[in-house]
Image 1 (cartoon, helix red, strand yellow):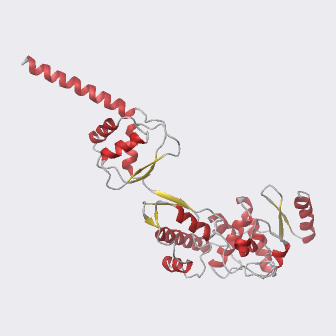
Image 2 (cartoon, one colour; image 1 turned 120 degrees about the horizontal axis):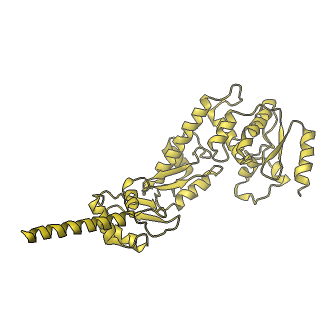
Image 3 (cartoon, rainbow, N blue to C red; image 1 turned 30 degrees about the vertical axis):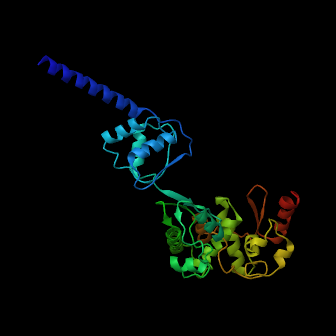
Length: 331
């Protein structure tokens, strides 16, 4: 009988010791990792192999201990495939939760405001987590797939970060970006200011793309919109360099010349009245909002001040003075 009690006592002490050790291990931090380190789990990977891969990437030191902790917590079968951004200074317990939460098991791609459609396609093609189905497809084919009624892809896809499961097709991501742009544009169109000269939401999108390329300052977007709308109302040409640059395409070498401004093209707003035929870039929501809620201003001109901001003028003489003050003096 004494032997039985002794064995029970030893078992209890051992159990307490094991629990204490596991608690210590669970709360101890993983190896310091770089802020940008990622860990990828392929679908169907054995949990023991996952633990070994964590050791190989020097995220943890003890594969067996990590495996035992996960099995005791009944989390070993809950690990989800995907790509995880491993946070520095988290505990082994927090790491298990991260790998089972499903929060970080997605890949992502970011489309930047001001990009053109060519930039977007390059980003899709370079992303290794995307199933590439559009590389050999024409822009027209892509527009057919996303259900666009427009015949030109520029500006139709909303700039944002899109999260997706690895091996999602680029078609699906493009469809999401197109639908997001349509939804946000129509929402802004429904609450637009009265008396704007746009006939359709698409015309507002064209203006928003010009605003996007004209200024990176959020505080100026509505003012830029006000200037361009004033010009449209009085029949004055927009005379905006970004449209000319877009029309030049790959011929643009970083410098816009007087000859470029005089050479007629569909996108030369120095030689043609009204809006260009399509957007010239992907506008963000702030630029869309500015196009549909412009500032109430008398200004007809603006010139860069050299610090990213602009000086706005109501008359040509005032504008010419500002050009002398801010641009010719810099040269």
